[in-house]
Structures are given as C-alpha cells and as structure tokens.
Length: 390
Image 1 (tube, rainbow, N blue to C red):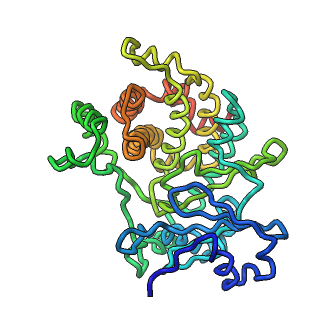
Image 2 (image 1 turned 180 degrees about the vertical axis):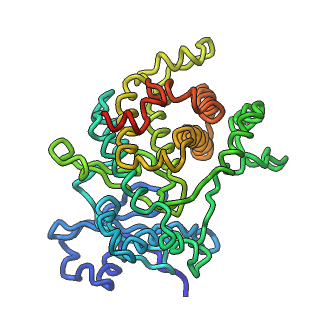
Image 3 (image 1 turned 120 degrees about the vertical axis):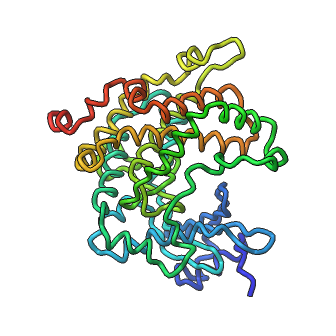
C-alpha cells in the first residue's frame, strides 16, 4: 500500500483517526502551511490547542530519509527510562509517529519562539547573558545525566532496527574523498571552496584527527544550531532553567558532548561572520573587524554559555582534560558544515565563505590559541578552580 500523502484536505481526518480531535471541530479549526524542508502543517483547534504535523518528503521511489524515525527514537528513549523524565521538559513534545507514512506530530509550543529569530529580528546586537546561561546549563544537564551509562548506550547501539543504529556521524561530509565526478555535481563556487580547502593539508589532517578522537559517551543532539533552540516568550521573568527547549532531534544519538557545545558556539559565531563587510580591497582581518555585529558583542554570551555548561558539568574537565580544545575543533567543523550547506542551497561561496573557512581553519588547527580570540579570556579562566570561585 502506498504511503498516505498529507494535505490541507486530509490532515484533519488523519488527526481524528488518532483521536487527537473530532470531526465536529473541523469547521472551526485552522490549517496553516509552515515553511520548512519537510511538509509541515500547523493545525489550530477551536479550544486553541495546536498540533504541528510533519511529514518527510518522498522521493520518486516513494522513500524518505528516515529522519523522523531517528527523532522518535529520542522521545522513546526518554519515555523508556523514568529517571530521565525531567529531561522531557527541555525537548519538544512528540505525541505520535507513523513509520510507514513518515509522519510525526508534536504539541505546538506557541509560548516559545526560535532563538535565532529572536537574536536577528528583535534584539539587534543585544545578547542577554541569561539566555546563553540557560542554553549552556540545559545542554550540560542532558549530557551529565546520561554520561557513561551502559544502559542508555545499549538502547542506541542494540536496536533491532539498523536504520536507528547509526553509531558514528558523518563528520567530514565527504570532503576527504574528492573525485573527478564532483566537477559535474557542484557549482563553480563549490569548486572554489574545494580548491581552497585542499590548499591546506593541515586542515584535512585536523579533521581526520578530530574524527578519530570522537568519543561517544552520552545523549547528544548533533545539530544544535540556534534555530533548533526555542526561547520562552516570557524568558525575562521565567527562571533560568525553564526558558529553553531543544527541538528537531532528527540527528540525535549517542555521541560526543564536545560536538554539541562546539556546534552551538559556531551558530553564535555565524551571526558575527555573516554580518561582515567584505570586498576585494578589504583584508580578511579588516572585514572581521568591521562586522555590524562585532565579536566583542557576542563574547559575554559565549563566555556565559561555556561557564554555565562547565558549572553544571565540571566532571567533564576531569574525564577529558582536552575537552575545550575539542569543543573549539568541533566549532570549526560546524562552520565548514555551514559553508557546505550554503553551497548546497544557495550555490554561493564568496568573501564571507572564505573568511568563515579561515576562521574554521584556525579553530581546527590551533584550538588552544583560538580560545582567547573567541571568548576574550584564556582557557585557564574556564578551569574548575576558577568556576568554583565564580
């Protein structure tokens, strides 16, 4: 039987079969399309309850990427272990998953908003440290309560479904195996990126070394960009530990915590990097200095993010003395991933991309010396001793 393809016309009927609403409510309900890579419909019922209904797009063979299967696994994981029930307060609220139709349904959290949207549209060059503190402490809590648990690890590694059993993420995204066929697959700007990337042997070596050092030891999100973080609309009057939720767990897995922290730092850095003033006659250092959102504006939030993480989870520095260096390297890798994503969707690699690649190279190849540049403080200021005195 072919999969059900959801539409404006049949989504309400689909919800009634799941007992999430009844047909009497249809006349007074509202259905809206939400722009996204998947087919997303927001259904608002007469009592103001809202469901976000998401369906993966099918290819010409009627197949999907299976990302919702992986996301549902995270919710299943948190429901399987009652002692992790408090973690559910910090993630999205999935209420239904249908594998054959590739449909997942969430309670729509309309008292939250996209954190990147908040930073860009509402608070020009204002980055409240309270928000960064909540992001850091919430992420650390998820990592800390799942760290080194064989029972939790086995949940991910021993799944009978091979689709769910992805132990090692694709960190290099294919840039280590360039073949002649690539010339017919990427735009001219893409070739510029690959030519510049291949010029630096140290960059490829640093990525290879980081992949070898990848240490899966806890539950990780693996795509923790600012637009995958929700901020409470009442964040100013809400306790710090209740203002943040992490959504879109389509890459969630048993992974390396340094990857998550590095990815969210990279997302902050992109606000700086995409605000640069670029031109053929402007040196990279000058472009970075002239950014409309200077790095120094972000640094208080970046410091608070890391301080909050390490205050909540100080043991990570004892278990992994090189943790901050790895975070910096994963941050650099996330910037390269962002460049590749822009090439894929916008087919562009200009001066901003070149600057991003240079920053990524510094983070990957010289992580220790990058720490004072990014945070405005030395690595020793993040030590357990100094945190205990803060």
